[in-house]
Length: 530
Image 1 (cartoon, rainbow, N blue to C red):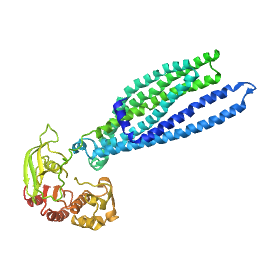
Image 2: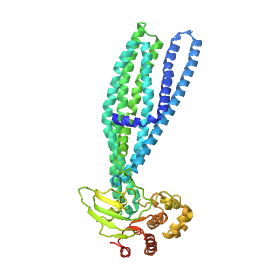
Image 3: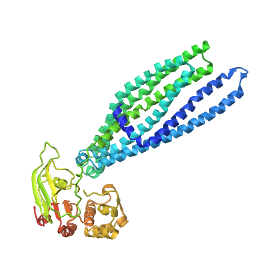
């Protein structure tokens, strides 16, 4: 068990100390009443002395007390469950919020170099595994500790010698459980990683199903899926098999303890040291004492899975954030559009050189066409200007100030109105319609079932690529930014519509510094600098 990970998970429970206190109190009271049960049952047994010598009134009184005891034990057990649920789900909510928040702050390079499906699996599946492990572990922690301490106290007062024997034998089950747990943790780590790999592959195939179908890749995709799925099956079977040995192994040891207690109790009874009722009570306590160890060993599988999953989640949380703005950073209010690249060098892979010592001076209002063969770094320059990546060396300045804050166009699940107003949420419907008309998106929006209230699915899969691009352009038309950075903004739009949009863009670019990645001659000819 990784104590560092356990300590870190428990650190998220600190804001919920009140529920921790209630849970621990509920556990103490619940277990206390539970442990009173064997005493009362033992007393009732002792009242059955012989045939014709049964104290029915005394037994009835004990039965009433026993019923009240069980009711109160159940009540406080419910309080314990309620509090542990509160702690667990609040804690998991906080971990998930922190992980999701970190995704927005990590450098784009981290997102680009990780399978998106694997990242999703960490935030969803792995955190669910933490939830299950934490809930079961916390419940067993409270009830187990209190049960062990309480049972020991009751056994000491019943018979000290037998209690010492039970305490000496019990650590054997802990040794067995710990020995197996150490070997199962690595297997659960492999299982979590393979699950993330499978989620990533499913996300990739489902998201590109049209390409898969077009190139008749279904059979090969199925083969790859089955290969990963078989590895997940094998790692799951191996990890579950190893962890499943824990509980039965502990139960064997506990059965030995139970047998020893029975033998020693019988010997004491023969010599008059214990009554039959006390033997019954002691056997119940011996079982109660070993039960927490069985339960803990039973949840070790969940705990090991939780720790392996927590390691993957904390890997996201521990990622360094994007280089933050300087404390004295200036917030742009009026951008002139004077852009300077001074000795800029950048590579996605340090071993493979890409951009080296790029120098460029762009005057306000200039239209810059970035032209070149595939892979030469056109979009990379855009990524640097938008600060999706930071330069390795050199500086990029806007109005003689180092860039700090600049937005990839994409569609999210929501209405068309919300998507257009993404950069200006306070815009009214008239402004949104005006921007849609300027981008020539208004005509196709009117033909949709609910017009501007039509819901777009995640990624815009229920509209065409060209329509998605028109909506992204409408965003720009609505926000009217002081600078324009366009990377093949009209690549998916038909020629007729493109001509109209280019006219709108030409008008929009007037007086604004513009960078345009272009392949079409019509775009290049209108640029001030190529």
